[in-house]
Image 1 (cartoon, rainbow, N blue to C red):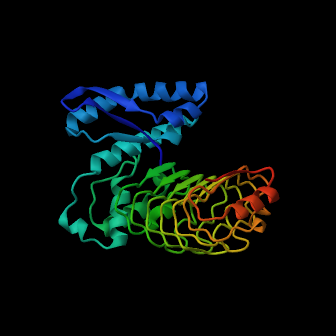
Image 2 (image 1 turned 45 degrees about the horizontal axis):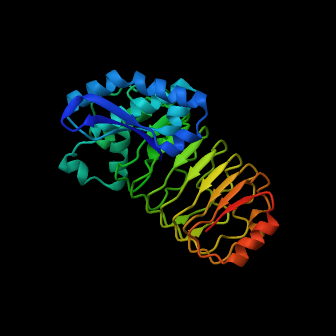
Image 3 (image 1 turned 60 degrees about the vertical axis):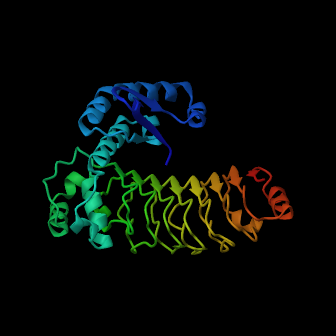
Length: 315
């Protein structure tokens, strides 16, 4: 996930703060987006100063770039609240919490990172937390963004089912290996799902039945196999990242139905073949990234001939 990082300007001074916008991303913005981001970042200065003065930490506050650019103020505010909540709770956990099962640990991290607009009591026991979540579905249905990155998750929290209006979900930089069947099923409003930098090895069928998903990031995992129907429920998908995995081949029909996909990133995979027929349904495809793959020049030439409207980025 690309972020804007807010941090003290000098290690010895907690009174002066700066934020860093990645130059490449900043240059890609139009003037309206640049002005919107700068105005929002400047408006956060008092809250940032208060946070650093109270916490006495020099770790940066990281705000998701796409939420900072979003026209909808609600998405930006949800991201801000989630970032502050995450920063507040990222402290050494109790021994009992460290020894929790992967499911209980995932639940406790979800609880700790609930945005501040959800008024929750002080609970620690997984059983009590589950009871509260079940009884407060209406409050959870108002949440549009959850940031569970860098939470040492091995599994995706099953309690995501209560967040029925979630549009942005950040699960990158964890240790997720597998998915519980149906774990994303109730997230029918989800637009962006970030799962990069995990330990995912296989993508099963029907795991992503998400009719409004626009961006799916699965880069920097250990993916070796993908079910032919892994992406069958993603009719609105526009961007798919599968870079830096262990893919040698893609099953026939894996991209069937992805008629709105325009960006496909396959960089840094040990691909042995990439037949043009794979892309026959991708009528809106604009760019395929193949940098760092082991494909021969003949393969990329054949792709270029078969897909003349598509920009192929390779070495």
